[in-house]
Length: 611
Ligand code: BES
Ligand code: ZN
Image (cartoon, rainbow, N blue to C red; front, side, top):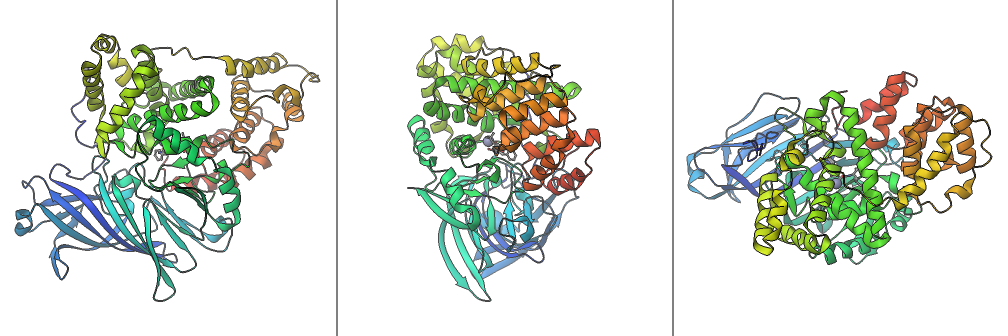
């Protein structure tokens, strides 16, 4: 097998994790909105695992480091020498702290670093009041995955390191702080400021540390869940997510007890670049899924699934991202099919397969790097490798294994054993494969032969589509395709009277999506065609962001200029990359709405697009 020997180190981090390992973090930060800075200190409780080195190397990016010290005990700080390495565009700067000899006699030491962030920090979005719903207060949120935690805290920014944390956030009294942890205490301090204290007792990788500060209110929606957002939209948001507890329970029945205590949701300001982010205890979601009809809550099912795969069981570096996202797609579809039926699982999987096909085709000659399930990320930015590939190729590998090994009866217990075995740990693909073999050697030797028949090399390191066609059930899909075919046959027509709202009355949002995606493949279309479809189905008026996106894309692709104002409205209203980037890129190609340049600049702060 073409395994590389870089698997045990993280090519995207400077940290010398074989010498030192952070075990616990104490964070104390004050928000300074005028200066767009977080200022304070972190105390790292560090395990010294190999005394060969006295240099404790951390990751940083755009941080101002003021001092480093060995915190011998509460009243005894010994100042330590530190140096910042050369700045690297992708990875930031290393921070090397020199330990004095006495420190190396210990097995554990506390290292305190005084520092502050700068407006350039890639994880911090300082949102102006005008960009919030209420327009009155500023807002701050962080997005640390994949390698942006280093721009919030000097840390070992590699997911191979997992630690607990406690934090105190000091913020203006009109605002509230939330973190990816459990709230312990909230109390006023001096000068119109409030302190919020948090604790995360579970071990997390640095990328799961998250902060949000703003005018935020909460409504409790379940025994362990509160929905948080700006007060103007909190009721609508709470209503959208009332079924959250059902998802968690299905996850628990399927795997293990939910380990994080609280499961809250935070609806962010519209600029939030993702659909959702699985910050522990507090999933972050885009407001574009608050539609009013609960039609996009699959994002919540996805983020809840990360409570097991990703957050309990974590990829040890970003080359093995499929262990986070492929597994989570697999679980998400399991949870949703328990609610909507087994056919729904295959339907959703076909959509994923089509997305994957599109991604693979779009990469063209760059396929080598982008389309391997386990890519080589040496000298690469993990943000650059972010695509459907780890999600859907990863899902397909698990789906395929489930099928050939004997179905859910055999595969469900394996998944559970996997989660239990790697809970609180990080792993890579080799370790995953080893566990898979060990499990079946122990539980059912006859399966080992089946495992041997898998073309592992192609699946894990090959480029392009997966080596096996999964043969999904197409019942729900055919309904969409049949309607799409009827339309495409009329591509050159002038009379569209045969179509009406009745055609789609039994379609759910997902089927509409598939219908539009399928139509999109046969574009461009005439103005008469686009107008007829809109007249029949009212797509321009639809609020569901996924449908809105596909419809606008179809219109742009057909040069239907009447849609421009709608597109501008859409990209102005929200900043979810999934919607904004393709629409922006499309316009860049056509050079018609220069406005997108502004928007592009706005979101690029976090995700340094190379295009
Ligand atoms: N963890 C991801 C988001 C992410 C990935 C952030 C990589 C930064 C780097 C999250 O769980 C996710 O996959 N979100 C999806 C939604 C989901 C339903 C597929 C998204 O944002 O579109
Ligand atoms: Zn995910």
